[in-house]
Length: 108
Image 1: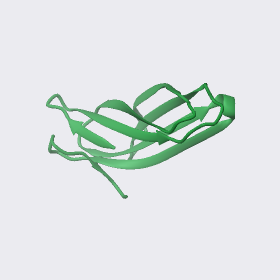
Image 2 (image 1 turned 90 degrees about the horizontal axis):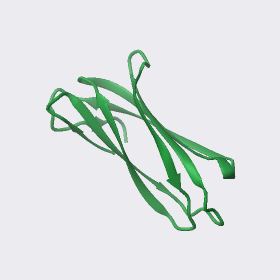
Image 3 (image 1 turned 30 degrees about the vertical axis):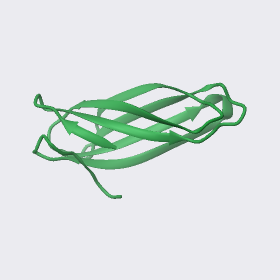
């Protein structure tokens, strides 16, 4: 995950994730990422889309643009492959510092 703070106060978070090969699949998976204010768990921004599944491993990047100030936030991303009956999600937290040059992901 990489992030950049814009001059207008918005933050753009680039989220990169990998999907392993899905044998005999030509379908799609639904993606949704939501950012929450860590203190009140209020939804701040969300992005959704569809990711093609294939027999080959793939890496995808999506952007989540947030109009937020400095503080702590929680991020949850989920992927749902309906035709396979598979669902997965990941949680992480991030801190938006006062500086516009660097956003930090908390933890590992």
